[in-house]
Image (cartoon, rainbow, N blue to C red; front, side, top):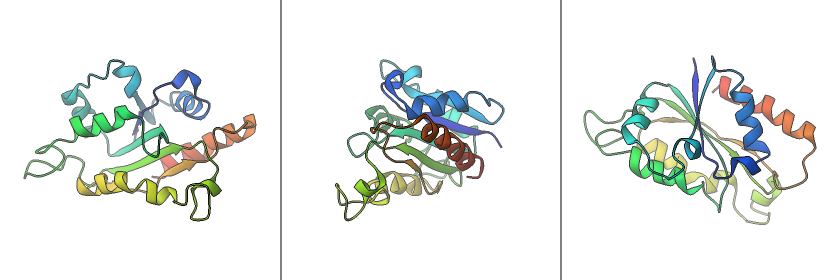
Amino acid sequence: MKSLVIIIHPTMENSLINKRWKEELEKFPEKFAVHDLYEAYPAGNINVEKEQKLIEAYEKIIFQFPFYWFSSPPLLKKWFDEVLLYGWAFGSKSGYKLKDKKIALAVSTGVDREGYSESGKYKYTMDELLRPFELTFKYVKADYKKPFIYYGSEQELPHEFIEESILSYLDFIVHL
C-alpha cells in the first residue's frame, strides 16, 4: 500500500534531516507519494478541495516536519484549519473522511532525547508536546500511530547518523 508523506518545512534548502528524508522518499515513487506543502503553496493559499481529494486517496498518511517552537511550522496549522472541515473531517454523517486511516508524525528536533524528558531541558516529553496532534487525529477518528522522532538535528551530525535515520524512517513508514 502506497503511503502519502506530507512534508512541512519552511526552509527545506537549509535542512539536513528533512531534506535528506525527502530525497530518499522520492527515490521510491511506487511506495511513497511526497507532497511538500511549502513547495505546493509558497504564498500559503491552500487548495482545500485538492488537499481533501489527496487525503481521501491514501490509507496511510505521514506528516513530516521539524519541531518548530514546540509545535509544527505554521503552514501545517493553517492546513488543519482549512482542510479538516466540519462535514468532511468530522461532525456529520458524511464527514469523517479520515476515519480509520493510519496517520503518524515524523518529527525532527534540534535538541537531543534527554532535552525532551521530565528531567531534561524542557521538562516535557515529546509525547506530551505532540498531544494536540494526537487529539486532532483522534477527534477525526483516524488511527493515530506513535510518531517517528529524530532527536538532535541542531548538533553537528556525522553523515552516518543521518543515513541511519533514513533506514529507520523508511522502515517506520512501511510498517505503519
